[in-house]
Every structure is written in C-alpha cells, then in structure tokens.
Image 1: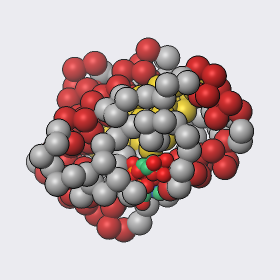
Image 2: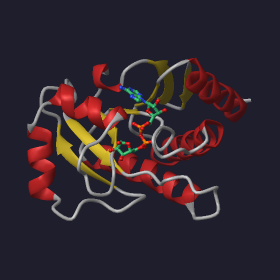
Image 3: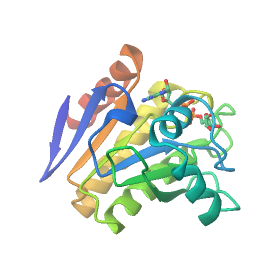
Image 4: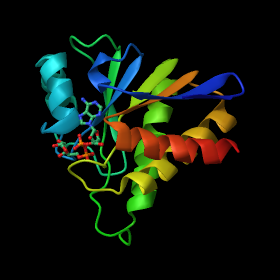
Length: 179
Ligand code: AR6
C-alpha cells in the first residue's frame, strides 16, 4: 500500500527489514545497544560485526528510551542504521505512546540530517517489548504523516511489517488517516 503526502509517500510492505534498499534502516534496539533477538538480531547478523563495533565505540552509554542514534550499515545495502529504542509496554500508563512517537520522530530527524531520501522502519516495540500492534500502528503512522506534511522529507517512509496481522493493522490505520 502506498499513500502520497505531497511529494513524499508512506509505503507499507510485508517483508524483512534487512532486505530493504533504502538509505536508512531502523533497528528496534534496547537502551544498552547490546543486540538481541527479532529485528536487532537480524540486522547485526546480516550487517556484520562492524555495526556493533561502531556503536560500542561511539555510544558506550547506550541510547535512552524514546531516542535513536546512527551508525553505518556494514554489509547491508543501506547507508545508515538508526538504532531506535522504543518503550516496553506496561499497559499504556507509563508514557509509552509519547516515547514511541519520540523514537520515530528522532529517526525521521536523523534521516533528514544525514541526507537520506528513504527510510525503512520495523514496527518498533511490537515484538519483545509487547506494544499492542493496533496502537503502535496509529502512533507510528500519525507521527510519519505529520512529519512529512511539516518537513516535506524524506521522500519515502516505508514500514516493513512481519506477517499479515501487522500489515493489516497498519493498512487499516493508514486508510483511516487518508479518508
Ligand atoms: N524484519 C521486519 N520486522 C521484523 C523482523 C524482520 N527481520 N523480525 C521481527 N520483526 P522486536 P521490540 C517484527 O522484538 O519489540 C530485541 O531483543 C516483529 O514481529 O524486534 O522493539 C532488542 O534487542 C515485531 O512486530 O523489537 C530489544 O531488547 C517488530 O518487528 C527488544 O528486542 C519488533 O519486534 C526490542 O523489542
């Protein structure tokens, strides 16, 4: 599914984040930037050890929840990996939605600052961190839409969803945002 906002677009695809041909790929990292399972495991496996070597040296104190930090992308075809730290879901009363929005916004800002025309996000926080998919879809797509309307870049914001359930949830929300 593709929806145009001026000269920019939001794309939804089903697939593997590591296979995306974009300028920046977003990692679903933890605040220690120590690697893990899911997206994080896949990015370090496919991208190779140079990514972790770089984040260890540039960010020895990790990255706070709700923020993101950039690195180069090793063997991935992207130029950058943006390591974003989404919130752990605690029922929705601990500022989770603000932290999720802030993680997405920081990645979009980093992409623009680094001259990236395209960025691919996974559904941050919806795996190990337990954020409900429908709520995550609403939050992430509204941040992306607002950013594109206001800043008019990057040209392509792609959400790479794992499986039918995630794709369906994002597609329903994107339809409602454009209705
Ligand atoms: N491509 C796209 N999406 C994927 C892929 C992939 N290769 N693999 C999983 N997903 P998660 P989180 C989906 O757990 O919830 C790690 O251990 C997955 O189905 O990767 O932010 C980190 O080190 C889910 O919908 O990230 C942290 O400790 C979404 O991506 C912690 O997990 C995010 O799932 C972060 O948890």
